[in-house]
Image (cartoon, rainbow, N blue to C red):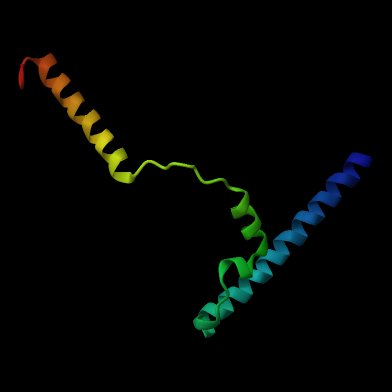
Length: 92
């Protein structure tokens, strides 16, 4: 019986959270349709998002996109060279 009561309580809490989010979304849609200039920022509309974003750690040193692209291109070029070598054509 305790487990059933706990499950029911969890379901009700989930429904309350969904109802709150649905209502908040309807308010944002009303802003977007009627007065987009007054639409609140994401952090204002959903304050808990700011807390989640603070918890996510950013990598200390992120590899630049061009470096990653360069590495992929070099791998593809190597595969092409190896394929041509295996079939007997291309550079020898």
